[in-house]
Every structure is written in structure tokens, then in C-alpha cells.
Image 1 (tube, rainbow, N blue to C red):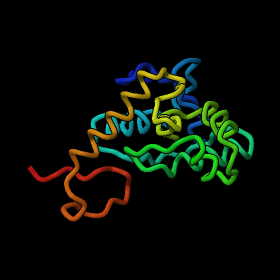
Image 2: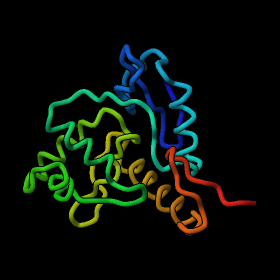
Image 3: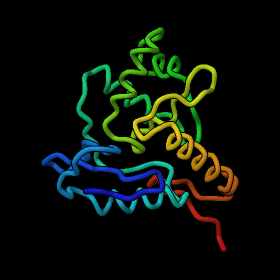
Length: 167
């Protein structure tokens, strides 16, 4: 399935059980395993209405890569960490380069938020969709977060969707 997004075309692939195995900027799109739900959730994300995704994911990688990808999923929406911090969170302090390599092999862009990792200096570093797309994703998340109502004025979230303020 191919999804047009504000950061370019995204190519989705699924496994036989319907779990998302890839969301990339290049490549071949697979059959539409759960595509309409993915399209809906990405639409909400880009509209500033969703901060987390609740789709079944099945990224294929080594145990180390999966540990890094799990650590990425714990980075809060609108926030960034460094590669060194990513290595610590994945359980291997001092392995910033290895964490960066695993981050770069993330097969499910946006949903596993590898765009939230920056260089120690604060500089935007490589991203499969290009550094411009990475910057736009981070700016989008920060802007969406700054528009959100104060935490006490909205009910707790249970689905990853951000509550809209009353009109």
C-alpha cells in the first residue's frame, strides 16, 4: 500500500497475520493488510490529533535492533533524545554508534519514531526520508503539542488520540 503524506510517499508492508512490517520512504508496497486503519491513524497524526499509534507492529531485526526500536517507542511525542541516550535506554551505555546504526535500520518510520533522535550537538542527523522530512516531523510534533489544552483540561487518553478542545 502506498500512502501520500505531508513528508512524502510512504510504502507499507504487512505480514500474513496483518501486522505492519514496514513503513518506508522507498520500496515496494505490499498488500493492504491493515491499510485503512494505518491511513486513518497517520491522517490523525498529521492533523495533530494523534500522538501514539495502536497498530500491530512486527519489525524484523536482530535482538539489539529490536531493543533500540522498543526504546524509540518510549520517546515521548514532541521530544528528542541523543544517540547516546538511545544506547542507554536500549541497555548498552556507550554504544551510541551501534544505537545509531540500529536506528537507521528502523523498518517502520514515523510509528517507531526514529526521527526523535538527534546528534549530541542538537543537530538533525540522517533520516531515511531526508533531514528535511525529519525536521518537519519534529516541528509538527512540537507545534501540535504547543496547541494542546493544558493537561488538567482534558480526560486521560486511552487510545493514543489527543482529545480535541471543546468548540
